Image 1 (spheres, rainbow, N blue to C red):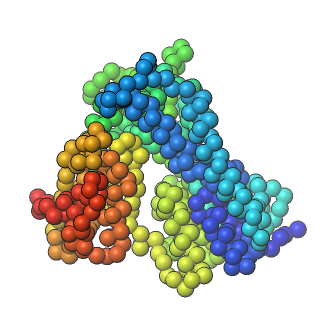
Image 2: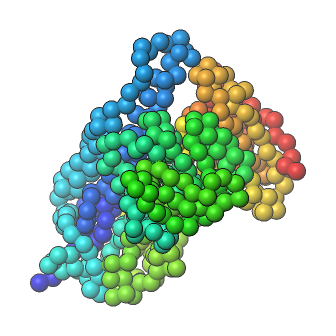
Image 3: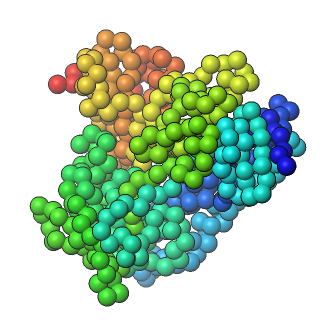
Length: 459
């Protein structure tokens, strides 16, 4: 027997639940299917739990620094990893429960638990139920990538999801991957008390960023005692008794790294390989992502792909924006598009990085005449007062149009301050709109106008 719906939503990440809510309010009958955890990656094994861990790690770090601020803490600082995990699980669990209750409260929405597979372009089977709808929305997300390196099936390892289950402190955590996920775990576990080594195949950390940003981030993590191995090709994972080893090929350093535990943080792959996409007539690209147009539509009429699985964004905020684009086009006669949004993201080490728009490399390649403004965080009053002076602000501007092209703020509150510039970019306004503002003192944001008042030609 087939049950008819107006729409089927597969997956409950950051796009699915708000889309279900909007459709519910429009009076549509909706089926929502989730095979595992309500809320997807962000709520359960991504943003929410990792940022809770980052907060605990920072508390330990600042406690150790107490004497710098005239605060005397008697005895060594200890970290109770079971309590750290319990706090993280409570915060994450609250978010999961909130999304679950939200979905279950929707009058016209039915939540199915199980794995969805296409039977045809407008029919999906979950468990023994066959569901039919003229509109189907895929919000199936991604999972941690496990690379095909020698020994990976012979040695125990963890991914970012597995790290959420740790309630003990690894003696020496080896992290394969020197990008956003790897660096956040590296710093937090170093602050908890582990010895940490980051092994990165590229010649620098977060290779997609400009070299000066990569170098600054490397200095930050190395200053905390994290060992960084760059230009390292991971040859093989091997056991060493009770320990594990990664054989590496490097110009400098020992030929292998030996530790107690391994975290693989080498990217993510889309959950599109077991959906029966062929029965719907949908193909995927070489990386497994579902191709969509500027309005999130697939090649098959009536099927959309939202969130990480479409390869057009890898963040919670881009996934939610996918929902906004679809809802605007379906219900509001508002032709919003993916291409309207400006690339923006953060790296949540401490101090954090806020990034928007073009890198310097991209700006140069655009052929535009570029102006650049930069200020070291050690010259920011709020940073000095907080004794957190690492990093810098950098803004790129088109010399002719006065358009802000991109910015990087690596430093205290950088992930928040960068939004002042992002707002101007979305307003399609010249940088002069904020270069003459009178901001609050003492803040980090007050130096944004100063940076913009001291632009120089990019040589």
